[in-house]
Structures are given as C-alpha cells and as structure tokens.
Amino acid sequence: MITNRCLLLGPLTKYEDTQRNVQVWRMPACPPGCGTLIAAVAAGSGKQPIIIGKPEPWLFRSALNRMGLKPYETASIGYRLDTDIEGALHEGMNPLC
Image (cartoon, rainbow, N blue to C red; front, side):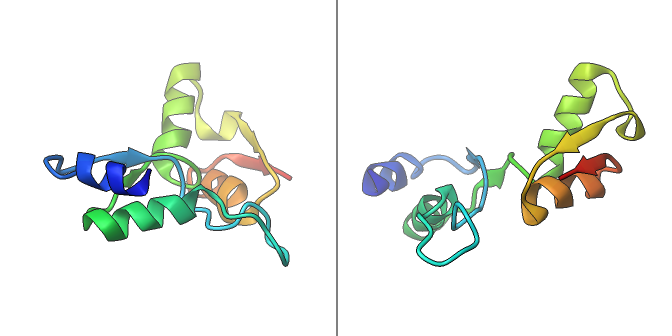
C-alpha cells in the first residue's frame, strides 16, 4: 500500500492528506494514527503533503465559510488539545472540550 502510494505520487508536485496524528490517543500502547502512514509516504516519496485536517486553518476556515459565520459566532467541540483546541484557538473560535 505505501509503495503504491509513493509510486503514484511520482509525477505529482502536491498532494493532500488529512492529519499528522502519529497516535490515536496519548497514552501507552496506543494504536498508530493516520500520521504514521502519512510520514511513511512522505519519506518514501520525498514529498510533503498539504494537510487539510485539524489543526490546520483550511478545515476551520472552510467550515466557517460554508456556514457563513464569523469565528467568534462559533464553537469547535473536541477533546484533543493539539488538534481540536489548538485549531479553534488559532482561528479565533470558541473551543469546547
């Protein structure tokens, strides 16, 4: 799977992926998160993805635009400080944990 993805990225200059979380939870014996595979593909292809998931601003700005709301008019609900809360604060939204 990783080899195929690296080969498919050969002619591409940019690609998107969802998030960089290496672990699903922050405790011992955690299962690997999506970021583990993203890091392997980036290393194998030599290309870094454009991350479009939390905490990147694109996701939050896109949601605000779709709803036609300002950041101070919204709340972002989540449980992870490094994705849910960080992203909301960066965009001026009210984080709820």
